[in-house]
Image 1 (tube, rainbow, N blue to C red):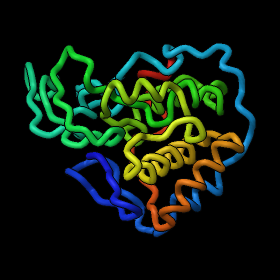
Image 2: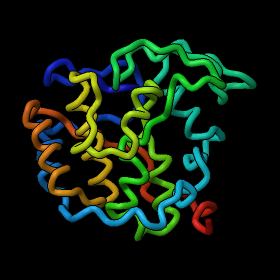
Image 3: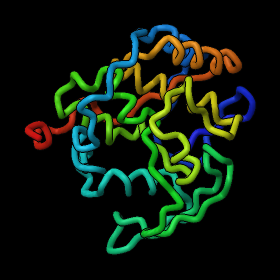
Image 4: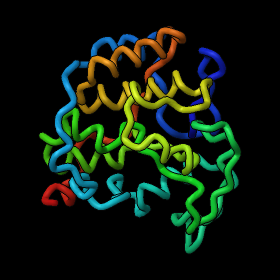
Length: 224
């Protein structure tokens, strides 16, 4: 599922994915509650610190990447069973608003970490154990199928440095970042919190996404 907004009214497009909380204005309230600190150095960061890419932390037999492709794409087709997504259509990319056809082996669709792993590292994750970092990297709450080229312009930016070009999606996007940072107890910079509040003040009824996986990966991942 991808969440979309028109103006400040959230709409659900498709089925599945995390359910939003029912309390109006929860996203803005949650943003207000986030701890503010300075950005820590990036020293020591490596993607491998968050485990093997797309680990099957929900134990359904499929890599996390395929789980998200199946959730977010329409007209999904599989190769070799019902796990390996070979084709699908991102009918409305949340970041650009474009329709994008996904074919396995081509790089037109990325699975974005809404809160970038490098950003998380600099705002608390450097101090976590491996199982919590692996959980963050594979949590559906923090993952979204998006246009690859638009996503790569984001890099490891936070709300203060990057927002989706599709303005109608910005409230939902920022609410997702707030939800992930609150769930995993990550801090934000002062500039980031100001930017979050600025976006969410334009949609004061914006709900806070919830759900996803536990904040600790299963036992088999914890020794990594």
